[in-house]
Image (cartoon, rainbow, N blue to C red; front, side):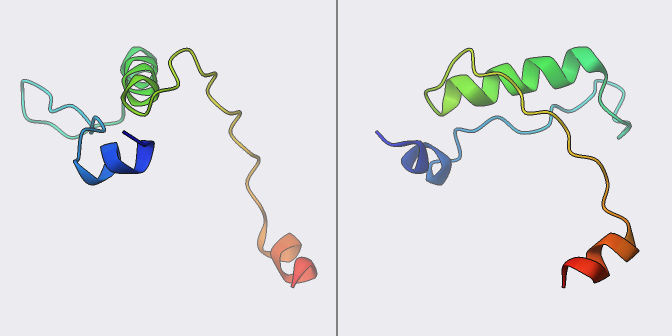
Length: 65
C-alpha cells in the first residue's frame, strides 16, 4: 500500500481531542507524538521533523515576484 492509499483511507492521525473539549495549541509532547504517528502511518518511521522555515515578510515576497 502506498502512502497515498493510506491518506485516502484516512489512516493518517489527526489532531487529538482534549478530554476537556478545549481547542488550544499543542504541547511539544503532543507535537512529537503526532509527528511520530504520522511518519509511521505513511511508512517512514523515525523520519526527522523538518525545521520550521523563517517567516517571509511582505517586502521579501514582493521582491521575489
